[in-house]
Every structure is written in structure tokens, then in C-alpha cells.
Amino acid sequence: MNAASTAVPVIAIDGPSASGKGTIAQRVAEALGFHYLDSGALYRLVALAALRSGVALEDETAVSDLAKQLDVRFCVGRILYNNHIVTDDIRSEICGMGASRVALLPGVRQALLLRQQAFRQAPGLVAEGRDMGTVVFPDAMLKVFLTASAEVRAERRYKQLKEKGIDANMRALLRELHERDQRDSARSVAPLQMAVDARELDSTGIGIDEIVRQVLDWYRQNAARVAGSER
Ligand code: C5P
Image 1 (cartoon, rainbow, N blue to C red):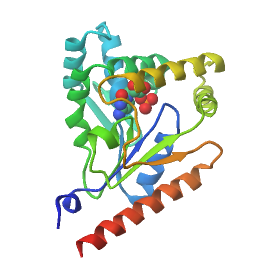
Image 2 (spheres, rainbow, N blue to C red):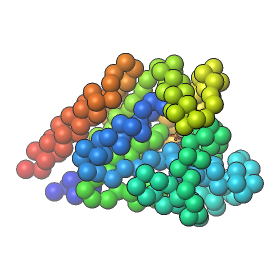
Image 3 (tube, rainbow, N blue to C red):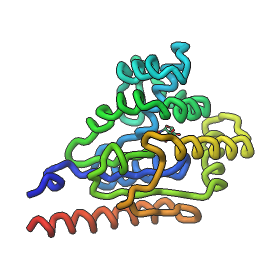
């Protein structure tokens, strides 16, 4: 047996904002009975913590300290910060933009690294974000890079916000998505980029069921290949 085979399997799903990673990752985790990590929620929580405590989002030392001390619990479908439910609060565009700013800081990324890796528990983990396959779980059993056109992504975000009763404007959403993608792709530490060994999946015009099926097929193929090579 080699090191990779003894490790708990990970499926890493990365991609730009609103590409459908969350829905797909949760459905795949459910199908396999795996744990699920929404790494973006951690960056959003750090932004929320900074905004609530009046810390400037560029203050690397102070924001990194907040990230280290973050008192967060993920309980079935709910996120608790300092024992308060913040599941919806962190979904706001302010927290999204704030997250992409604190995510630029190497100290924050370092503080969140071990926290993310601790989610790797048997029988397996589906982790979604921007650097799951490149930095956090480079030995993932399967890496998927999920994309969709900017228009489709803005529409999805628009619908999500409307469903929550939050007022939204398509043109502003599109502009914010571009801005966030630009910042996520251009940063020097762990930029949004496809891992060399990732499989790209463009979800534009494809139904959720089909995407989930494709990811599960790829995972089973890889798992069978690893098991075969160990025999
Ligand atoms: O995925 P989500 O939109 O919730 O992520 C919010 C922000 O957090 C992203 O725009 C990105 O800047 C940052 N992020 C990151 N690395 C991750 C997950 C999210 O830099 N693994």
C-alpha cells in the first residue's frame, strides 16, 4: 500500500464564483456518504469577523489573528460563529467581496490551511473552493474544475438572492463577479487556477443531475484505478 491509498479520499472541486460548486459538491458528498467542506464559507466568516469587529480588511496581522481564533461550527446545514447562526449573513455580497479581499492575505490563507485539512475524515471528503486541488489537497483522488459563462453565473446568483428576498441588480452582479474573478485569479498566493491534473467541466446549459453523475463516474474510475494499481 502506498501513502495515497491509506489516506482518506478527497474530491476537490474548484472554480470561479457561482459556477455551481456548492450544489454539486453537496450532492456528490451525499451520494457517497462523504463529509463536505465549503472553504469559501471560512473566508466569508473571516470577512464577517473583521467587518463586525471594525478591523480593516487589509490589516494582515489583525485579520490573520481573527482567522486563527475563528470560533466556528458547521452543524447540519447551519453555520455558527460565536454561537450565533450566520448561515445567511455570510452569503451577502458584502461578505463575498470582503472574503475575496481577505483571501489575498498569505497570513489568512496559512491560518485557514490546517482548519480545512482537518475536514479530511473517513470515509471521505468533498471539498469545494478555489485552491482545493492545487494547495489544500494536492493528493486528491479526483480534481474537478467547474466553470460556467459569466452570464449564467450572474443569473444563478441573481436567483439565489431573490429567493432569499434580497434585492439584486443583474448588471451590478455581473460587474461584481468579474471583479471577484479578476482578484481571485490575479493574486500571488494560491490564485484560482486549474490544477494540471484536474478535469474541466463547463456547466453552462447542463443539468445538475448530469454534472453530479459525471463527477461520480470520474471518481469511481479513479478509485478503481488506484485499487487496481495496489493489487
Ligand atoms: O466560494 P465563495 O464565493 O463562497 O468564496 C468567497 C471568496 O473566498 C472567493 O471569492 C475567494 O476570494 C475566497 N476563497 C478562496 N479560496 C477558497 C475559497 C474561497 O480564496 N478555497
